[in-house]
Image (tube, rainbow, N blue to C red; front, top):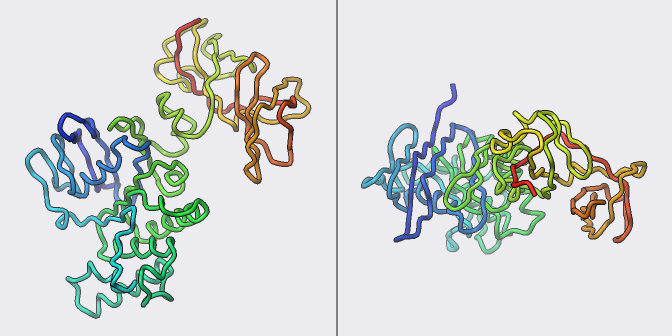
Length: 358
């Protein structure tokens, strides 16, 4: 049976008259890695700090293992919550060795148990060969591993990670994010990650909440956020794509300038577009992977920009009707700016939002 470890119920937080967290609720089950994803200033780090007990909430409730730790007028002290935290700047003690940093939170254990736990965590994060090194002698990735091992050593009920990869280069960030997910899963750790980087969110989290103006707009899997966004904001923030104007022909068909899409309006359109009937206008989300390069196609588009990405090229295309779309193409199809190329639609998930008819 799935058991909820963390529950936030209609929490609000404000600095004076500035609302930072607005009536936010979420539930996280044991063993699940969640993520708060959103742009800077959306309130995601404040939510994390409220969970940790570093910030008060004005209204609402926070519970851990069905025990209330926050409500209006009550806040359990952070050290009583059995929560581990990995900070953006790692916050390692510079005068302590790697082993001593990991050992720091284990004061309640007997010396022998502490030594065994430190050894176990060093092996878990792959740092057994730098036990006696100091933080300044380590790479950024190694420092991040030490911070993770220190947070996990006391076996917290919940681990919080605040933008943990922001100080690392892109290649290391991608590799380390996958490794950290494996570590968390091997330990059975329940965790919440905060990030503005959707690639990090997709690599680590089981469930992701996209935040905007202090609210969770959609809490879902990475797949559904990309293919079934519930709002224009989520559609624009997650992944890449453009909106093309379309006209609903009937309950099964929407026409855009590239052709007619077959779709079950009742299931594949958002709620605000399902109510319209034949003849109404919608904005259809078209992702780069929905437009496929095809030299044999009679449908042509002009390359107006290209971004080389190694294995792939992201083309910006001017469509016959004057609209613009993106197409992700294997890089051996190397076309010049200004060249016309053949394209075809391969849309599996139609996402549409209502619009005012022109």
